[in-house]
Amino acid sequence: MNTATPTENGFTLLEEGFSAQDMVDKIINESSMTDDRDAFYVCDVGDLLKQHLQWVRALPRVTPYYAVKCNDTREVVKTLASLGIGFDCASKSEIQLVQSLGVEPSRIIYANPCKQVSHIKYASANGVQMMTFDSEEELIKVARFYDNAKLVLRITADDSKAEVSLSMKFGVHLKSCRGLLERAKELKLDVIGVSFHAGSGCRDAMAYVKAITDAHFVFLMGAELGFKMDLLDIGGGFPGTDDVKLKFEELTAAINPALDEYFPADTGVEIIAEPGRFFVTSAFTLVVNIIAKKVIMDEESDSDGKMIVLFVTNIFACSKLTFW
Ligand SMILES: *Cc1c(COP(=O)(O)O)cnc(C)c1O
Image 1 (cartoon, rainbow, N blue to C red):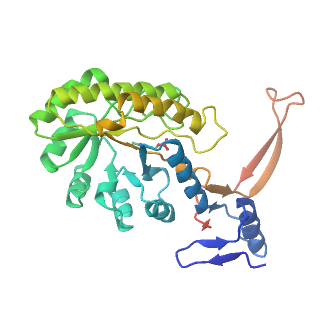
Image 2: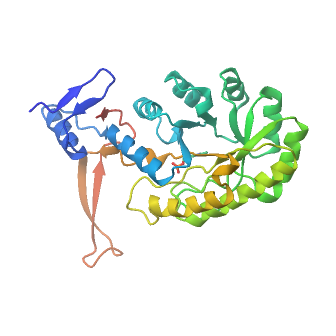
Image 3: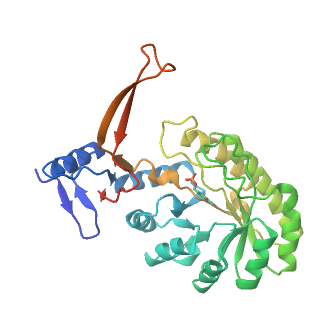
């Protein structure tokens, strides 16, 4: 049976019903005649589309800007670009990648609050206006090298319950927001909205709700100072699989009412998010070869004190990737 047809864009088209496991078996079979036992990835491109559908259903008011740093494989970015979504880029090279696939600058947010000057200049030269900030130093840089930028103030969120906390590095506390907004005003910069990140792998829906209320408060502050804010960016943190403590739908069930309460549709505020792992986690399967096995004695383990240790092929050197 000829189930696989390679296409010129690097994808392999498969018949209905073919699973990741089938693909893995096929590749293992093909390599069984050779010495090649290196680790490899397979990526189910259809899964990216499924995730997108799930997003649109669960968060109808929120446009996703995929966080490229999560997985910058060209085919992934290309597939997501074809869906018309936006992109969160953290550096010049990510902006280059996304723009090389024909994405317009208005669909890109440069969501790194601490940017290199040469990268700010690059964004300026290439029309990428939306960018985040969380310090006075960044405002001064932007005023000097890109006074036409559309700035988004990143506030902190309580991400203490997330798998990966980001608030140590990024985000300003509510009490410092007014001072920063005043400084932006003095520097004649345009602040168009507020962003936050509830931590990667967020396990606490209240972190989003609290951050949305805080963002609302900053919008009021902005209005007092004469800014016309119309962008709310609710960041990333959405789970990529269902085997998590807080499922995607449970999270969105808390987020949607908060958005409707604090940013009702008639305010005209555009709402975006920066999902990373949400889009790519389930699409990718990593296959490793077990190269050695040891049984060791461990007093702390189960009743018999035996622990089995498996050694696998180097996954960091893994360069093979098959798409379908
Ligand atoms: C890493 C990152 C994301 C994506 O986070 P996920 O938890 O993978 O959704 C989004 N925005 C910013 C600014 C990030 O640094």
